[in-house]
Length: 216
Image (tube, rainbow, N blue to C red):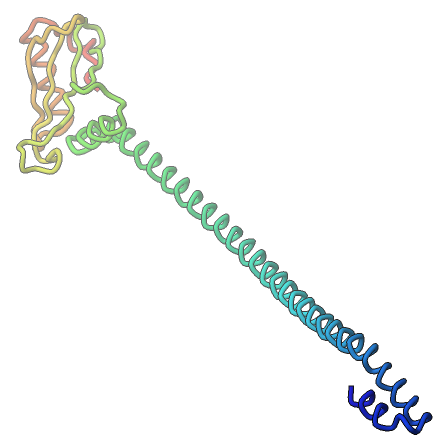
């Protein structure tokens, strides 16, 4: 605009006036284009900067994802090892318990005693191997059964069966009719208890004779 103003002031000098008019016209026409171009360049710079920041964030996110994936894989591996270790411990413990139970049950026959019989009866009941009212076995060469009652707590203040208490038995017919009761105090050996059993069979009239009485 200033060039156009000066061209009017120098209108008597045709050459300078023409130069100023052309210059002013050029500025008027191209100045907006220049400004628009600079604005576009500025916007492009902003877009490029934003794209660069997005790329950096994507790279950072990818790195974090890779790190997280490694951590997850490591955690899964540790969990798998922990589960395997736990399974091994449980399997070993169960095997140990079964072995202990087998020894306890074998003792009843191999080393009969009040203690062995007590432990065998209590453990068999805990495993659900016997009925709630105990188990019974046939007395050979008779039609009589000897029922082993499951030891229980002697009173409400006791946590469990007392190994020092008497073991209780009863003689039953095939149909379950109770003929008489027997007790095995801790002070008696297995042989002494079986002698009492033989005498009790005699008392109820079902003793098969010395040669046929298989007390063991």
